[in-house]
Length: 283
Image (tube, rainbow, N blue to C red):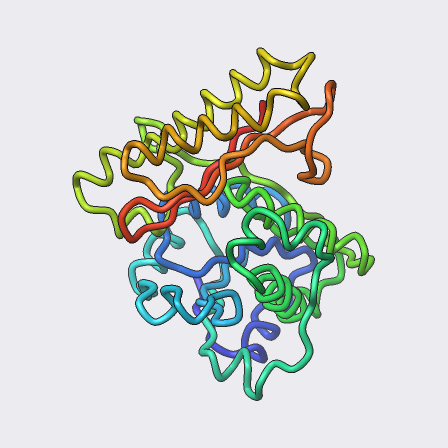
């Protein structure tokens, strides 16, 4: 496995290959990230994982400065699952000057749910992902692949739409959410939880599953009953000491309010102590 830190070195490392598969990450890797690499391995002829904590997607009050940087351990894990190239640029390498040009996604997708509670988040995501695509795919002669986890459901949808609207020759591949034995979605931020919080954390996924069951049971009158179902789900978590941002049922196609017969996804975000967790299930 080759570790590179500059864009020029990344392009040189990938030049002999035709069809790269990219896994963008912010590091502090867990089994969920490694599953992304396993998904990427059979897609192309070289597997690339980027490790970069992107300042542009953090609000001033969020955890950019304290976000764990664990490159040495990350590289050991990546090598164990057959990653070929790790791209770990510095902030100066990725942003040698202030990033004045940014990719701003449409408000109807980017300013709801996560975007509502984290203003500007998806502009930061789209900008860095577009730049990573330019870094990793500029030498490619064949098909290009990028793998993203379904745990970040809205993020994956935003990126798919970005690739489509810019006519980028890149195939976006989704990888299923990886979970602990008790059902908690794997996340780098799970490491912030105390022992007691970790035991409680599974309640988010349980609340979402319950909301999904209630929504399916109310299918014929979903539009009428959904606000009350969502309110009860939020109140149930809050009663356990959580601070929920949203627990909601949306249509899978565009994350707008559902109508009877729409394929659905249930999504949630809530803070437990100082740690904000997200999860989702297609139903």
